[in-house]
Image (cartoon, rainbow, N blue to C red; front, top):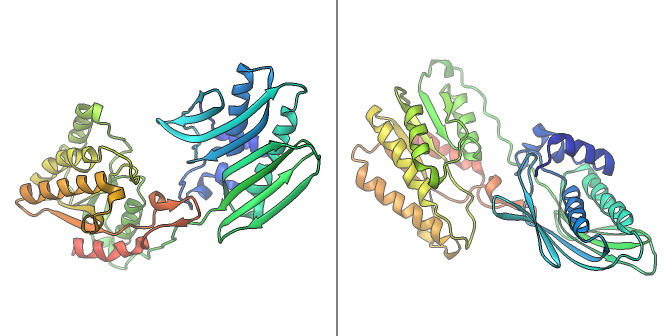
Length: 367
């Protein structure tokens, strides 16, 4: 199952939620999400409907919804149903979790529940005319039939919405999104004289975009390796694609920004992307004397236990490069955590140093 942009537009009209991160690709690029995402309220309604189709004699007495990550437009997902919960799962990860209590269906209240959820979407989506994301909400059946709407600012970017209609009351936590750091480079007067060619891996990386824009301003000829996600189980295919792409091509510089999502306390095979794929590129590029920018991490010297597997894979990669790069073609640059789409905290801020500190590293590498 997936929702396309037309589905987002239709839900925007239905709910009167004008939040542009759901319907405008150009606007969404300014934020950590990078592209449009489906309305959380729309997904929740589909999940609740999914349950009711399998349990027609039930209605919801209490609901708790937790959004753990956005669901992108055209992203494939499915629902996993349990006795008192339902999850929206995409790429083996839980994007949304709903916990609920039900009772026998005495009267059809889902219409009123739907109206309340649509109104939550409208209020949050249009709040202060700035893009917002719902983090979680709770809904209860109410007996006093009192209607209310109240938005309270809890912290800098975090708000609480208390809203109720004649049948349900709700408590919603939402966050205002912060734009990514905007950087513009002015093209140098002598830039057209520069004929050096660059190949960037990791096309969707904020670091790759920054590097591309900066080097373009200096006149470098920029090439991106086509969007392709490397999977360990398809290693032979990945090797073939890389070797076919690099055959009979030469570049002055390669920037290796391929990276999976880095998550604390999560066991992952980072080594596959940080070394196994890199080896293929290195073995092809070394014959042309291509210089390679290889980003590593300052976490190595800090030994952060939350990123144990990530740090271990970078150490292995650094050791391999030191031992095998006899011609000193690879520059291993230990970077601090940089503010990017990967380091955005859903509580409303970017973690790390400004991405613009990368400029000095690039200048040292290309001089």
